Length: 88
Image (cartoon, rainbow, N blue to C red):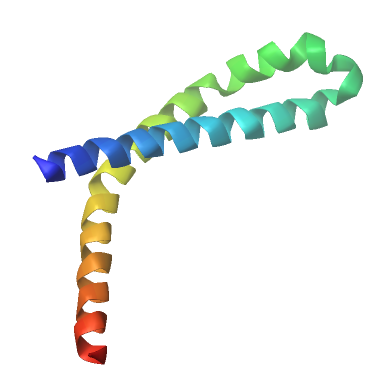
């Protein structure tokens, strides 16, 4: 069950990090495109315009993190273990 927990935790991390990144970049895009004067009025429209991309990006990254991070972490741990025993 440790592997399942690792997959779920990795997928959740991918979801959270991607959602935070997309929110931050969407806000920055709105500020650059609309300027300080129009930001308050148009930021919602920029979020709506990017909603499909954000949803797709978050979903794909959630799957990728859940599938790729656990085996990568196992490989890193195995590699570190080999390095520790080789240096002894």
